[in-house]
Amino acid sequence: MKNLYDSFLQFITNTTWGQFIARAPGDPQSAVTVKSIFQQDMYAYAGYYLLALTILALAYYYFILNRKGGSGYGFKLKYWIITMIVSALSLAALTTWTTNSLVNRFLDLHTFKLCLGLGVINGIYLIVAFTLLSIVLKRFSSANRTPF
Amino acid sequence: MPRIFVFGIGGTGSRIMKALTLTLAAGVNLNGYDLVPIFIDPHKDLPEFKDCKELVSIYTDLHQAAYAHQQPGPGAFFHTPIVSLGDASGGEIASGFDFDERIDETFGEFLDLHLLDKGDINRDLTELLFSEKNLNTPLSVGFKGNPNIGSVVLNKMDQAGWYKAFENIFSDQDRIFIISSIFGGTGAAGFPLLVKNLRESSNKYIQRAMIGALPVMPYFKLGEPDKDAEHADIDSNSFFTKTKSALSYYENHLKGVDALYYLADLHEQSVPYKNDEKLQDNKAHLIELIGASAIIDFSQTTGGGSKAERFYHYTPAENTSPIHFYNLGNQLRDQLYLPLVNFYVFAQVHNTFKKHPDAPAIKNEKFDAHFFRSDAVTALERYFQRYFLKWIGELAQNDRQFAPFNLRLEADRFHKLVVGNPLKEKKFWVVADTFDHSNYLNSLENSRNEVAHLSGADKFSRYLILAQKAMQSVNQKKFKL
Image (cartoon, rainbow over all chains, first blue to last red; front, side):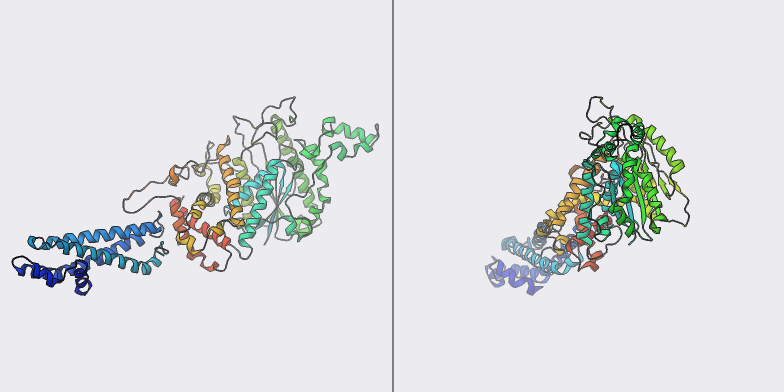
């Protein structure tokens, strides 16, 4: 999980952990704790959330919205995009909220940027995973020509 | 394949043939028989006659376009072959569905009365049997309710080339069905003559063929004839008298019909048809649909080796109006229900199929814009609009209403489509549980595996077969009896 998130988080927030710890006002031990929370807890949570929401979104789109014998025009690309965007935003929000609730006690460290960064990363990963897994799963659904 | 030769005599013959063609298009099963319609009507300009011929012609074109290279399964739209006598005879006569020629002379001229001198005993006898009005009747407009004229004119039928061709091709398993009215002119005259000619045919198969007949008794009335009007020849007040006369004649003289289907509707119309065929806009009538079902029933009866005549009649479950599938009577409902629901829905959703090129089935089957502009699809659309939907609408508008479908659905919601069988609307916020055109569009994709064996088939053929499977799959679940 660390490999999946750590470098990307530092890239997207434009801050390495070293810089984060160095810039920490007062006790740098707090910044080390934050780093530890991210690397040992939050990346794992984020991974689980990513997995769960991707599966849920794909199942909803391909096997509920476009279930065999069902109704509606769910096969249209716009509904696939909507499902993906809503899932990505939900995942980003959930990840951000969870992370923030674990590290918001370190008020002086301004951790929200890191929390939001992790949320955005998870949203991006969901979009990638959703797209790739769609290619595999679409053949088992009525919407077997979506997204392409 | 064995054939049923259906003789449609006069206006009623055309109207029932029209109903039969429309029900066959919906996939109603004729028990594996090919249908060979033969129209007999000297009134070639009658709009309903021309209309019916065009309908049958479009049907044969559509059948040919779809199934020229493979045999569709039972239940497929347009699966029953309708073949013209000309084609069935292998080109012995011209292709077409009516072969009796228009007679552009009066009845007197037809009899060559002018060749007889005044005072000639034959002329005197003729003038005794036929009134001056009869003798001056132009035959180009039919027999105008005069079976005494019709029986003379149609007696030459067995000398015609088309009749000889029919005799030549008739074979062992073939059957014959005759549709006529017995309260008018052409049908009342032609029916017993035709039966006589058939049983006296030189073809032994015709002599012993199974013959069914539908002599239709009065089912509409006309306005009082205006004495000064140009078209005041037919008086519907005499329909019952004529019917009684015909029935008493049949009782004693009509021999050789194996299955007789008697049909009438004594329901009095509140608004009679106009007594002028130029102004008449007779809407389709339930009796014509029931009449068509007689031919379907006839195709399914077995000869049983007995030559005893069998008599059939039809009674609805309720004598009410409107009639719909749920008070139509069980046997007829079972015969027509799903095919008509399927075809009606297909006529409704076909445009939706066109409008969604991104739908999986439309993409996978390559039903592209080019396909939807093809001659076959254009003919199909014409069939829907000009004939089938119009016919369904007319059945619901006639005085004796047959209204099986809710023709004014709100926002394409199908829950209330079948009158007498409304479905409950379920509402879930996450899952769309609407029941509209989309159900059929999705079903089209899900039914594709059922036509996998037709991968090499023509696109139009696949479209028709796939559409029928898709309609059937949804309707069987949703509108089950």
